[in-house]
Image (cartoon, rainbow, N blue to C red; front, side, top):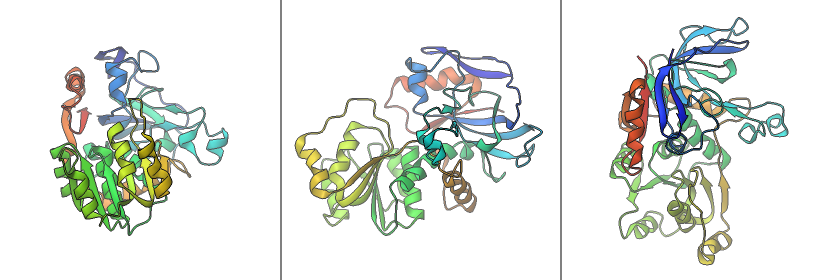
Length: 348
């Protein structure tokens, strides 16, 4: 088969690779589309891959071409999304259903060969069947969509409150939609990209605020009647927006950091004191699985994509490339401010 293989820093090639072999309890998927996650970028342009050579890609969709004899819930021809987390199922955290905190986990597309290939073999328990009418491009967004929903679950989200989404990328746009689906009284999306804010408005944001505007904090206080936001989801992994969350929080708010920072983060005593005075809760969210594995995050994503309440628009993708154009796709990331949205790799 053909696959996108990473051999070292900025050394990625589309080449022949042995086709994965079906094992007990597994399913073979013909990959149709696979998104480039932000975590893939430092693995390709930096030196953060776990080993070489490696096939990256964990946001994949495709069609089942083969199933092991002991698998009966998945059939050849099913359209599916793949759950990339491979928890050990034995450690204390797994036994409690906290799979994202597994001490011995593996992960398809970073620790195991992934979806930037013609085929991938994964456990049947990691396969989520989807409505065959859904475009493969949309199904490739399942993983970031479940990440967004997991954050709402971690923060014990309840409707009827004001919500702020910091960052208008893919995860932020899905967090916006989940907040609306589950009854937010108001959702405001903060971002720097006009394109992202425009999409956010189209997907149902009540207000969009550009943090490039000098008076954006005044506008934020206006829309909350100077009370601040009850739930804040930081999806950009930016030191600026992580600090901004402390200022935007209402009394007794819940702040959830989804984005992964890439720089040292420091707070002034005055800024940090917000947590004491407002008595807000600060928490993190990691990956997207819960019990029973892989969790309601995946089940609900499939359901709400099928009903149309959870929406996808092509503008969520900055660009789409065939797999053999992978070098061109990753060249886009040499200018980190250029790419506005996911880049998708596709097979025929």
